[in-house]
Image (tube, rainbow, N blue to C red; front, side, top):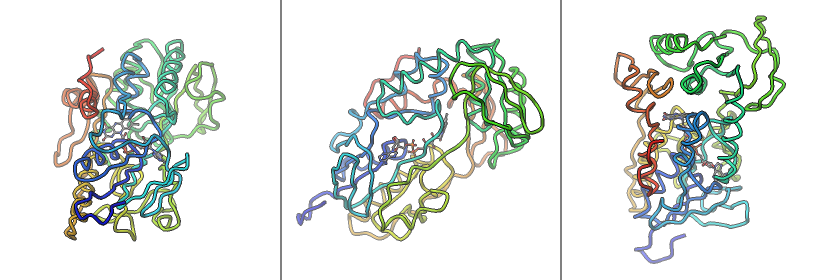
Length: 372
Ligand SMILES: Cc1cc2nc3c(=O)[nH]c(=O)nc-3n(C[C@H](O)[C@H](O)[C@H](O)COP(=O)(O)OP(=O)(O)OC[C@H]3O[C@@H](n4cnc5c(N)ncnc54)[C@H](O)[C@@H]3O)c2cc1C
């Protein structure tokens, strides 16, 4: 907490070091005393996680240690268990006082897109084990035909032209969300072109008998009666917000679906010094790019409040945006303000080929990595 010295910088505790949290921590590193609370030893660039599953030589490029992130601030390797407007309590019992708090704890998502493991070594082993199992599987079932299921199908097909890949969803179209029908049609066309089988419009009667990522043959049947036999499966749905640490003063801002309510300035509902950004907040769609833009707004607003100003910036959504690679050279997308959908060449250029790994490496003070 600041002392009475007027020149003292405010203390900003950022809870969670994902895309939103690391960006706001870095943006405030000069003007504030930043404390970033994060249980993992490295940022996981999960946008490239599916590539690392099919090609583990990418693993060193997607785990970026926090050591090189901040020049002045500190990173506390711990989990926040109670957060109040001016205090963060961690699992190991450390109490950190704060002038401002930024909640950036994001969301959980099934492996391999994200992981709960907090040690890079264990997280990489988890990917290597799944890679080994996937290598030996002839038939793959992906449950969930949203962006992750589509992308994972493309990654697997790129490395293993012969495997059978089934992409299954309860909805009767792929991708879901507020996206253009032409985009869904184009992704569907490319999936079918690469011999990914689509089974849509009916849920599974029961979950597979094996754990996701485990090599063992199983059979499942949809409610509509279609049987699928596969040797491995992955769950490709289920964003769950991480917001179970809110103390009594903040808990009313957590909606029944678990997301934390924010206003246009990204202040948590009912609060002036607590902000929430990224997947855990209600600010926008759940995208890393949006979390980064929200981080910039929050950094501006904390600087303004610290200078005694009340003219805070409002976060404005860019609108619907998505880039869905199908392997390094395929895919399609939709960009804000463009009527036409975006084709495979542009998607390969902006995402599919290098999955933005160099951009993120540099932000963590690492040299651009060498392409595998
Ligand atoms: C395969 C895949 C591809 C994607 N591709 C894109 C893309 O191309 N473009 C795009 O914009 N988005 C993409 N996304 C979505 C993007 O990954 C998420 O929107 C993004 O991760 C959200 O960032 P965040 O900072 O809110 O949270 P997260 O990235 O989820 O980070 C939250 C952090 O908080 C930490 N944390 C959790 N609980 C606590 C606690 N109690 N105390 C302290 N720390 C805690 C976690 O360990 C984690 O490090 C993709 C997602 C997936 C799964």
